Length: 291
Image 1: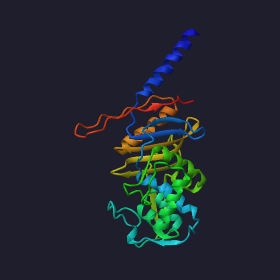
Image 2: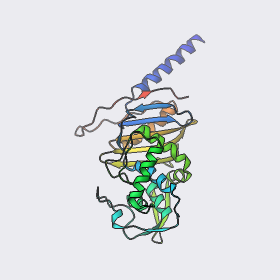
Image 3: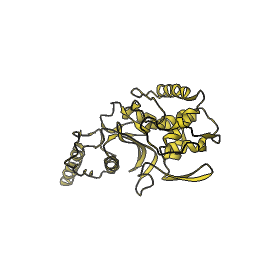
């Protein structure tokens, strides 16, 4: 019996040490137990960084707050195009789309034109949207969040990982956001024709993944970002990953978080190509072993 107790203790210590040496690929990471609010894992979580399309979660809440008619048809204008990064994907100029459909496109497909059109048609126009966003940020107690535009294309849209935990918590009061962002794929109607879109979070709908809400983001300044409510190993957690250099690195971080919750050993990243410089990875801090 004594031998078994000692062996169990050694296994727990070894497991803790193994996780203590894991280096997340993302620059900013936090994992929070939704029920208790306890920070389970974190890495530079208090530092503000570009949040890219994670912005759209705040945009969606601001739009839903004013309770405009979801069936009202909105025309996509040239002003809704991406004049900052000059990307071209999204609902085309001239398309006439229901407001509710634009919200779906902005959240599940991260459509920048849809998000811009929603903000432009907010009461008071774009200026009214910006002011409402400022009030929302203040109401949610986001201490390191700034938001210049509704899409996240602006490099001035910043947030800390800890602030984004509050954003995910706030979406619980908006069931539609969870409903939309937890779909693997969706079909909408644009100009009277079916328009099929797929969730930008490729983990949604994969075997073994129970994702209750999520949003991805990417710009050159922000890197690959992901935030989600994840149910795994009998608990629901809020995960925020910011600043990964590639989608595969972001996915590896997410997988290792799920493995950590299940008490499994982490997977290691493949060595970077010699020609690709990388910043030194900082190690995670494990606050408490998973129950």
